[in-house]
Amino acid sequence: MEPRHQGLLEQEPLQEVDEDVVSEVDLNNTITEEEKEEMHNELTKLEEEIATLRQVLASKEKRHSELKQRLGITPLSELRHNLSRGWYDMQTSTAYKKTSESLSTAGQKTSAAFSNLGTAITRKFGDMRNSPSFKSFEERVESTVSNIKSKVGGTGSGGSFEEVLSSAAQASAQDIPTNNLTENTERTC
Image (cartoon, rainbow, N blue to C red):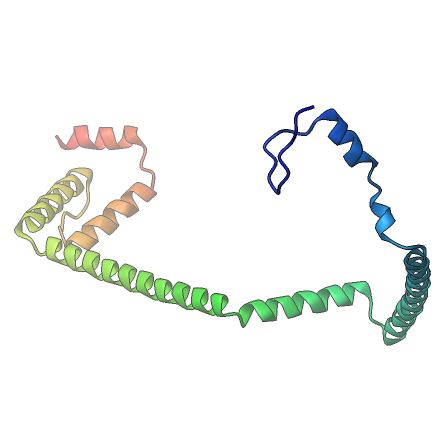
């Protein structure tokens, strides 16, 4: 074999012989028999303490259950209490308060927007009704309705636009048969 460079960093890879030597090293040799005995004793004590703690916990859980039963605390009432507490905690959280305030502000702005929209629509209808073209249309409708009334046998009094609309609605509600209407129209013509 070639001489190897001794140092912290070897430059050659491990040989099979080196791997065998490394695998034969017993890492447990660093612990003395006395230390092993102490560790086993400590392990035994810990296992006994764990068993004791389990027994104490079981007895405490039993007492806990008995007290809840005597107080009338049922799983359902506990669930209700937990839900109520959770709801209260959520409502008092900063995130909930900020979200609630944001939604309230958004609702107020939306309500104001719809109110403004309704006012604008009402104003536009008022402006439209007062416009010359609508008045001309209204006059034409009134004269057409009064012509129809006079031909059908009505009074032909004309009247306001609202009266004409209501009388037209009443006439359509009476369900005049079309044959009679045709006969009346032919007789008048």
